[in-house]
Length: 229
Image (tube, rainbow, N blue to C red; front, side):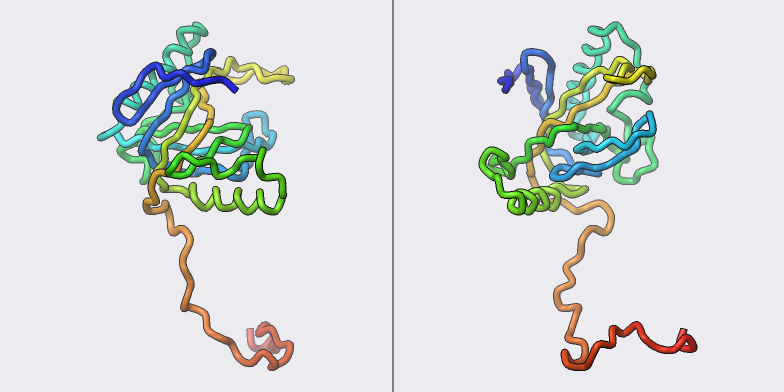
């Protein structure tokens, strides 16, 4: 496992190097569309179904200008190193004001994904899931469900990202795709529960009462004549 060396830090960010590439820890941001415990399925450019872990961190413009600039600096280094030009629509970082999503307004947003499960930690920095210690499948699945509950759309997190350059050539494919600046989703830490996007889950305690008598028979409440419809 590569040791990370911190090479730069500022307000709400830290930049590390693993000996090959730069990674950035963006701190105190909310995320949308996270899939941390279980993979999400999407259709790729070639029409194939792609499964990955995903998260879209949202960097508030009022507080995260330095973090955004640090991310763009890494991106520009990748473009220079590869002598590449990548138009804005093929870059993983976007101006949220240019989107139609209400929650993205006033933010920069970064689309990140990874084929390997990102490291997930609690507020103390403790791992939620260590595959070396947990071998029981049912126990592991329960923990992964909990991780998906902890990292919901709208939660505030610290997130470790790895920008990288895609040259348009996919392994095992003859077709050429647009060159891109992509972003790996390496790790995430829960910071604070903040309001979820959308309605989210509800607590229905106290809503339901007993219905009839347990010995009332087998009527499931869906019966009746056609004339009743």
